[in-house]
Length: 247
Image 1: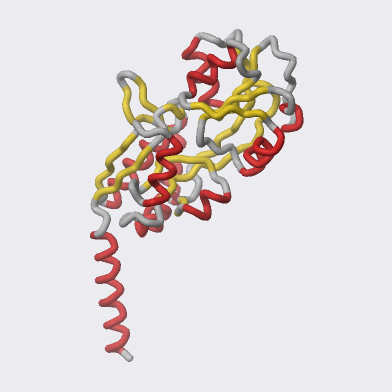
Image 2 (image 1 turned 180 degrees about the vertical axis):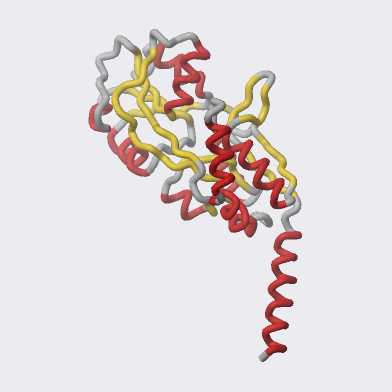
């Protein structure tokens, strides 16, 4: 019995070491326009709550991080699905993503809102209020199953590349509203100098958890457990709160 126990422990250690050795470097893509979660600015590259958290966590795991912020969002999702990248830094939860990827525990909550022209007659209080209006949202973005399913069946929501273009379309009356996480929407409006023209309308659509997603076909997929343990620690939760307060 003792010999079997020793052999089991030996093979467990060897297997665990092999798994860890298989991931010495991890390639993580991110949306470069999702303030304050993941974003690039002219003199500030690869910034945001998720990226600061990831650097700290993978430093503790002894894994080098390669960040890629220059890929279209839908391409990132496709590459993650087939294992061409190891992870996506941050995304909203939905059931398809839960099924297709390995998700970390949520590390942040995002309030999703409707933004409209200040002079628009649109008054949002429920999804039904959006019927008959033209909306715009980022291509490939998910705002949760409830909104996504309702929009597909009942709403006219144009999907485009580039968050700045959403503001252009609403301000130029080519769309009536855009859908965005609250902090990102406010950031875009202030950056464009449109605070008097575009405003938030009504309550949040939903409050969505944000996760890091790992490819099931990546050699680094087995680090999810260790990464998740770090995320759950009180000191990491406090680190994330401090980073979030900076934005």
